[in-house]
Image: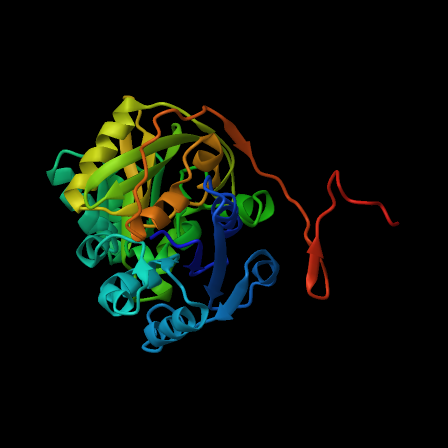
Length: 366
């Protein structure tokens, strides 16, 4: 018998995507009542108003983390967990049996798949062996390796980029940098905005002198079009593939994006899902090479940051994850609208326990 009311726990909820996920769940096509509980390691005032309940929890790699989440699940009668950060995805996927025993489903891929994805270089190695197009890349842990790698990739004639090789160190584009010949420290500091991902050569070299704990994925920089693809899977089988073109970025988040058709990208996604045995919602990111080949640049084994776009286009992927987790039947919808999403800043005002926004229904009182 289908549950009338469902409770969902969203972890690492401080990211830009969470309010969109909440909107997807609250506005599901069955008009089902869904309670949303959010957690994070730091206070998130916005979510104290947008979610039904908010809790502070330890970091995902803490020994106290699983018990803390389990305690919340029991108290709030949580049915499904949507993991957010890399460390939480790793820990929760490793402990799915414990949660299953308490009637809670962790909506993520199996731990073996997650373990592969946590090492970006290892993931690239596996996919390249299976003829999946990825950028040219090198693992770098020492200065000499870094210098050799960027030379092999064509620097300074070509731009290169790098980021931490461990997935749990790269949330929200953390650590991602682009190195170009024209970059200088003065231009980066005085002319670029604080959220710039550009870096100069000298600063890159100094990185290796300031820490001994360097583990980088250094790769060719692909300057062409970027796609963020929303994939819904069932144990290695791809059920949905919805590419969107990232048309405008701010702090590396999509502020304008459009649903598009791209059979070439979807065929690649289908192979990746099968190779890695992916499950539930997965976000795959591609950039187009100079010879017009889509190359995979990132795998996020979680709900993607712009999941609200495919939902408004006709397919509510977060809600389908709930249906799948609860073993409820759902039919595959083939018709998806080609729409564009534009993000913009919007204020939420708090007055005690109440919150409100200024919109067309707001009565002017000042």
